Length: 192
Image (cartoon, rainbow, N blue to C red; front, side):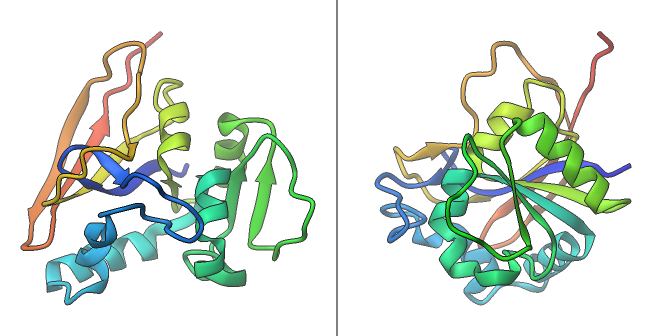
C-alpha cells in the first residue's frame, strides 16, 4: 500500500511560504530561494533526491489554496506531469480543469483514500501545509521529508501548526548540501 509522505521545502524557522503569498506571489515575500536547491544549480545529491521523489510519486494531494496559487505555473498536467492531483476543497470549482485534477469535498482522509488507490504501490505526496496539518494528527502521514533551506522568513505559512498532542518521529535520513539540509523522518504510529 502507498506511503503518505509530506515533502516540503521550508525555511529554518519552519515556513513554507513567506508573508503575503498569493497567486501573483505564490512563495510569498522573501521566500524566492526556498526551492533553489531544485532549480538554481543543484548539486548531484539535490538532483538525486528530486529524481527519487518524482519517480516514486504516484499521486499528489494539496489544499485548495496551494492549488489556486500554483495551477497557472503547472498547467494542465499538474506539478508532476501526469501524476493525478487530488485537491482538498470545501466547494467544487465552477470552472473546468484538466483531468489531472480531482477535487475532493469530503476532507483530507477521503482525499488520501482516493490518492492511495490511484498511486498503487507508489508514494502519495502531500504538498501544502494545510493538508499536512490536517492529516498528521489523524495518523494519516507515514513520513515527513523536509528540505530545510538556510533562510529565516520570520512569518508566512508554517508547515507545522497546532497538533493537539506530541507526535514522535524517527529520523530515517539526513543529507546536507550547500543549498539545503534534507531531513526524512518516519512518523511513529502508536496503537490505539
